[in-house]
Amino acid sequence: MTLVSTIVVLGCSSAPPSPPKQDRPNFVVKDIKGDVLGMSLKDYRHKHPSVDCSTTGKDDTCEDNDTYARFYAVRTAQFFEKRLYSIRYRIEVDDDLLPELEKKYGGNHKEIGSYSLQWDNQQTTIEYTKFDKAMKITFSDNALAAKHSAQQSAPKPTPSRESDM
Image 1 (cartoon, rainbow, N blue to C red):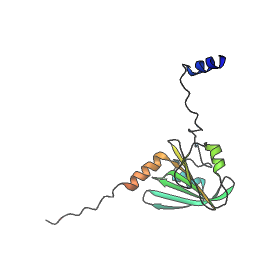
Image 2 (image 1 turned 120 degrees about the vertical axis):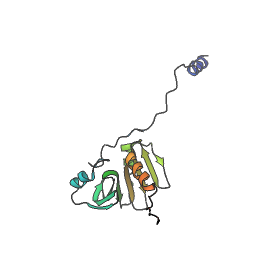
Image 3 (image 1 turned 30 degrees about the vertical axis):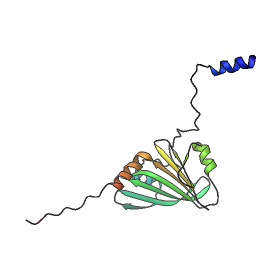
Image 4 (image 1 turned 90 degrees about the horizontal axis):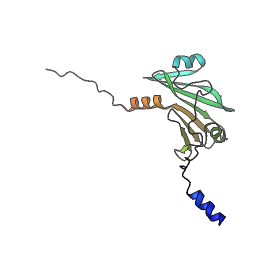
C-alpha cells in the first residue's frame, strides 16, 4: 500500500517540470589568444607586426604562423570593413582537440557535415573540422560575418551607358 500511495503522490505533483539541463549553451568568447572578434585591422597589425596581409575590395586577409593549444598552426584572420570577423587555425597533426573544445565550450554543438561540428551562441560561431591528419578551428563574429555575406551576395551594379541621341 505504501508503494502505491508514493507513486500516486509523485504522479500528482503540482510543480511544473524543470526544463532539460543544457550543457553550457551560452559560452562566451572574450578573445582568441588575445585577439578579439570585431577588433580593427590596425590594432591587429600592431599586435602582430610580422603578419602578411592582402586586401581585396572591402576584405582583408592576414596570415601567419602561430600556435593553438599545444600545436603549431597557420592562423588566418579575415576582416570586413577593417574589422576582424573570422579567425581560423589550421593545425597539421594526427591528433584531436575535440575533447578540449568540449571542455571549454560545452558539448552542446551540432554536426554540420561528416567531419564538422559547430557551437553557436548567437554572437559567436565556432566551427571545428577534423581531417585525416589535420584539423581546423574557426571563430566567427555572427553579425560581422552576416554583413560580409550579405555584401558578397548583393547584386553588383552594372555600369550604365549614356545612349546616343
